[in-house]
Each structure stands twice: as structure tokens, then as C-alpha cells.
Amino acid sequence: MSAEGFISNRDTSVIRRTSLAVSATSSSESNGSGRIRGVVFDIDGTLADSWNLGFEATKTVLAEYNNDREEVKLSPDTYPLSSEEYHFGCRYTTPERLARHVGLEPGDDAFEETGKLLGDKFDRYYVQLVDTATAGFYDGIGEMLIRLHAGELKGQKLGSGISTDGVKLGALTNACVEYAHAVLKANCPQHSSEASSLDAEKASIYSKFVSIHGANSVPRPKPFGDGILKCCQEMGVTPDQVIYVGDAPTDAQAAVDAKCRAAIGVLWGSNNEEVLKNEEGFDTLCKTTEELSNAIAKYL
Image (cartoon, rainbow, N blue to C red; front, side, top):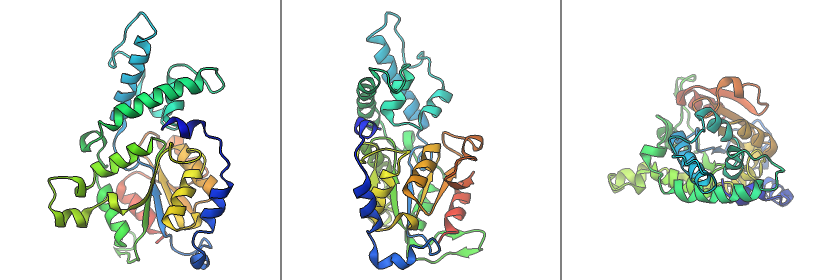
């Protein structure tokens, strides 16, 4: 959720042309009817239960901003930001979200400058706080990722394991890319001193992600599809061979913009069914990780 992703207006036509031409040898599979070859995941509210980390870090940064400018001093606990306001703001990049939280709107003279200032402070502060306590995976997510990558994802509806050649994994967040790496590493046994080398190699999650991006490493952040297209390019797949999974309206919009094969929405993040059910891009909404596994399995 860094400022570069927020203020960039670079043309994405080159990325689009490149990503669509990435896998000429598999063009016969890219007709919307073959099995998918990749899944790109949002992180916060989709893979990681990290809302409280973001919420508390937001209030800390906003309280400091207030105290530098106002006579009435506030602490993170007394800063007037509700969880509902925070969740709604998560559909934006960090700079835009924070600028909005202090009462600015796009088009205001100080909007971009203030957003960048607050976004940089937020990124420096909360990335260092990432661990399994503050940004741990939701129950079942780690196992699902390992089985999906290995081609062993179980489809309950089919009653048996679905055998595939494995699926390439990507991650795209509107947070900064450094945060994305921190969360995936924190939830990876390979980077934990508690795991044996054998177990770490078998259950390594971080290394299974071919492409990892954030708002500061793509031309334009979600709701634009630029980040998904960049992931597709690095994964060696075309967008119509990819599913995007997320928890926000901007995730659905990005999937549509990138022309993904499908998008799946999860309901355990920042947005409920009422918010997501009318989004054009979401083909399926899932209430549990088991439902998510089954929804992905239908495309294998």
C-alpha cells in the first residue's frame, strides 16, 4: 500500500501484451475451457487474519499525525476510527486509505502528499510487527496452498483427490510488497526454527509462490488489473488460465480488468456477503476454507 502504486499512471499496454503472449506453447489451452494453471491470492482478509494488526497500526500512525498538529492529544486507543471505517478503507491502497481517514478526498490539494507521508510511516511500522500472532493464516489455508501447488487439492463434491500437475501460486496485495513477503515468510515452516529441515522442505509455503507483488511493485494497484497481469507474466500463464481470490470489491474489479478466467470471493475478510454478492467479477463466494478449496477444484 505504498505511494508509488497509489500515484502511478503509467500505461499498461506493454504489460498486457507481454502477459498475453507469455505462453504461446499452451495457447490451445487458453480458450476458457481447459483447466486452470495458476491461482493468485490477495493476502489480508483472504490468506491472513491480519485485520487487527492493520487496525492498531493505523490508529497508531493517525494518532501521531493528529498529535503533531492538534492541541488535543490522542492515543491509539482513543483515536476515533471504528473497525467498520477501517474495513471499508481496506479496499483502497494504504496512502489513499489513510488520507481518507484524516478527512481528505481525492482531488484535495494535500491528498497525495498526505497519503504518501502516512503510507510510508505505516509501512515502516507494521511490516516489522508481522508474525503468526499478528498475521497468521486462517485455519486450513496453509494446507490448502500446499495441496493446490502439489496437485493434491481435495474436492469434497467429487469425493476423491483431484490429480493435476500442480498449480502455480501468486500473491497480490494492495499493501506494500515488503509486507506480502513478510506475511508469507512468517507462515512458512521453512523460515521457522521450530521446524525440522525435512518438514520445512515438505511444507514450505513461501517458496511455492512464483510471483509476489504489492501496490508499490506494480504500475497501478487494484482495482486495476495490472498487478494480476504482472503475476501472470512471471508465472508463465495467461489471465484466462488464472483464478484470482480476494475479499474486497476491488479484487473482483481487478480480476475483470485483467480478464481472469474467474474470481472467487471469501467472506471471512473485510467485506460481507451483502457487499460482495453484486460484484460482477466474483463467480463464487465462499464462507469457509473448505468451500474455497472446492470452488478452486472445479476449475482443475
